[in-house]
Length: 427
Image (cartoon, rainbow, N blue to C red; front, side):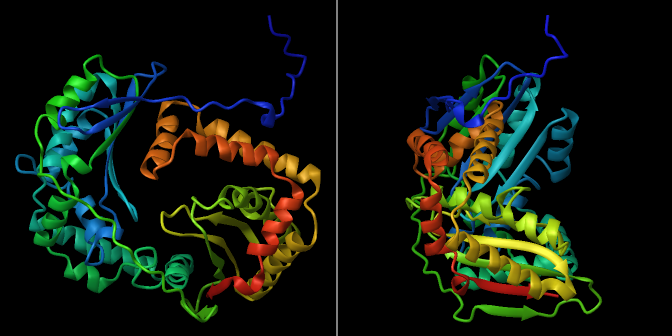
């Protein structure tokens, strides 16, 4: 019997030998790959279909995201209401997302209801009709949402900083507009759907407690035919056109009490050898609650409720982005403190105690991210879609465990010079 009066032994997270659970792979009759992580812990499953249908491939702004959204709003046999009622009746959830490179449809449901839901999913994926009335509702709702969001300084700041980093015509920098929503046409979305949502461009990721005949059902509904024909998707080369000027101030809300601060710079993508090292440095700078930016600007100065930095995980390029909302009267002081922390990392060695804490935090976060079949399949999905394997995962783990304070200082000297950063304040 466990003695509750004795505290359990504290284990160093870096001592764990983390293993990425392997997936099973099955190929449907028409060639669609299915990646599987099985688990019997709960009677639920997650099924995700992934297509190269992100904004990178669109010729007209917002077509990719609108196509992805409206596929669920009516098929040849079912109306939007019928689709949603079928999903809700079984307590399921069908989510859709459109990113820069990929578009996804994800079904979460109880295992026992999968056989009832997969015909509905087939209707959504194989036979969307993009009704004009649904497009009109979508257009109206999105324009209203945009009008509201444009009054928020943080929303405006996020739009502008990406435009400065990548260019307003680049997929990473393009933003929504009233005019773009007005220009959307059902025929354009139908053409985009036919080109990008095809059987040979589909990848399936499934996790959880699977029915015994799961593969047979997937074959029946998605693997029997070459639906939508065979389309060859070539990823076009698009040049980044970053802004020449680096300091911007935008007046957005004269009655606001807070301003949105963004300090960012371009950075190589995840294939660059410095990327995993920068994940460690970024965590020290602003990647967790005990970071230097939080300790200084939130805890000591009281300028903000929270500040953090992140690395974009885009396919072509990345960026380091420091963001916060602060009182209007201290936005400029906040930027000065950010630069102070950048210079400190360039000039001073990170103390071993702090580095040890960050190592444990990062390894602990990864352990949490692998806690369950749904989380493991997401990790594999990111690797597979980016042309990587488990070696990339293990190399990142090794970097976290072995990177030295001297290496971090060298990295800071190369990438954290204040003059290389774009700065934006929206008030």
